[in-house]
Image (cartoon, one colour):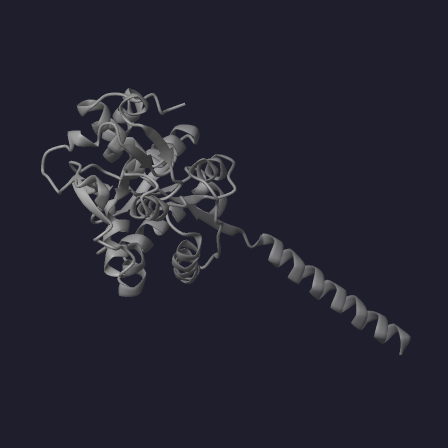
Length: 289
């Protein structure tokens, strides 16, 4: 009887060890995103994306929220995440730091992205097709220091038309994200600001913008922006063809709810060379390490 019990115990130990090893062998695929909006909105959006990727990739998928643009790049560099939803500039920076990493997908709208310059009603500035030279001397807030639409491209045009922002504005700030930029200008804390057009349009549709307090005064020419970027060593870790599969999963995304959360019509193929204009502008402004 004792021998039979011992055999049964040994069998259970063997089963538990096998199960534990199986769990250890399951690799978690982790992704992140630049924090360009309110954290609660991002957690909801990317939580849904994690569920979608888990189902389509047959992998354990985890979304890792970060608190800043540099933190997203660092997580990608250190292999804490294998995939990231980057802006144009953050994507260029990340791919510089991780050899063979690739931009694989972008929204249909992303090759023709744009920035709005917005102003508080007290400035009396109106919408114009011409760059608003009268913003000179006012206070101005960008978004994050690492944002393409909230800093890189608007600063490029400000320098082109007016000069160094620190010399032409009475005060220069960095709000941290597009939602906060809108809130600050709407409240009059800054007289003008630069904001991602997609965030503005989305918040306006949701009734979160008071047009009697803040309005768009100028729109930049279009430029390439957001994209999914994946590390070049993913196939080695997760199996040959994983990178192509991740790309296909995004390109095949048809769920209206998921796409609406991105304010995108669909996802299309992206490649590193698409972001050459962003890299060129970043070099002009000395924003690449």
